Every structure is written in C-alpha cells, then in structure tokens.
Image (cartoon, rainbow, N blue to C red):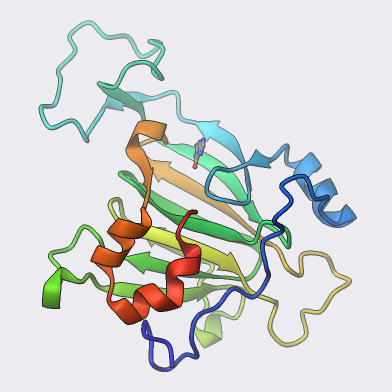
Length: 225
Ligand code: GUN
C-alpha cells in the first residue's frame, strides 16, 4: 500500500533514469526534442521556454513591495528582482532516459496542460501549517487522457508547493508504435513568470522534515541527488 494514498500500490518509478547523461534518446523522442527545440532541464527531462509575457509587473514575492515610479515596461528584467514578467510558458518533456522531475518548488503558481503521454504527480503542501509533528499534506494524481477515470488533462499547482513527477506507461490500448509511449509532454505556464530566484529543490533533509518516515521511504528516489 502507498503511504500517500492507501488505494494505490507503493509509488515507484516506472522507467529508470539513464545514468549516462549523453545516452541517446529513441529516434522519435530525439526528433520531438529537436522539433520543439528542447534542452535539458535541471529538474530532469527537457524544456523550452515558448513565451515570456512582455507585461512587466511588480515582483509579488518581495516582502516590501517596491513601487517604481517611472519604470518602463521595456526595462530589462532578469537582473531586476523588483519586477517579474506577468507569466512564462514552457514545453516540458520527460522521456525514457530522463523520466523524472525531481521535487522542487516555485513561488509562482503553475498551470499545466497535457499534450501527450501519461504521468504521475506528487504535490507536497509545504506551504500549509501541517499536522502531527508538522508533517504536510501530500497529494498524488495521474495526468492522462482517461478523464473518466480521474486522470487530469489540466492541473494547477499553487506556489510554495513541493512538486515531483514521473512518466507512466500509457494504460490500455496505448501501446508502442503511435509514438509517445514512455514520454510525458506538457505545457506549463508560471504566474508570475519564471525566475531561478523563485525556484528551489527540496533537499533530502527538508523532504524528510515535510513528510512522514513512510512517505520519505516510498518517495526518496524522487528527491534530487
Ligand atoms: N529556465 C529553467 N527552468 C525553467 C522553467 O521551469 N521555466 C522557465 N520559463 N524557464 C526556465
């Protein structure tokens, strides 16, 4: 039984990450990576930024919001922590070789849309008060096309949550041959727009504080090494 959801078997990786970072992807995955111009993501998998909203807004995460009289919307942003782009969007792809997105956290909320494949998400509600011993609520769901079985095609992860993900095989009739088996391709829109300074990984130490011992045992493999 899963310590996250007793109606499930223990949560395990379905595909094993290839320890060789230069291992070639399958031809169909390689052409998808090329077609979408994806590069390696630090969380695992591949990504490409497809939109950075030119609208510049005050950084809502600053403890003392800065008013910036005379600021122009054309101001360069990446070196200015007082502002953010209103949103950014990426493609995000997990593959046979790189089938896991390690537990991380963004200050902004993320709207996800499934493009192809199937996967599991685990959300650690790190921003909530927590219960016994300060342990946080942990949630898991499947993203996929079988909406009648509760799979999600659109899902939102609020800012401040720990999030990890991995590829699942296509259920039922979705065998090899139609492309995409052993892949998960989604789009993610982050609001306000992504900045590295709003992003961090859960360390193993922090992960163990957030979740129960059983949960840490079950899902430690999804913590970044
Ligand atoms: N650069 C590195 N990671 C990301 C990400 O998750 N989103 C965006 N927009 N840019 C990134």
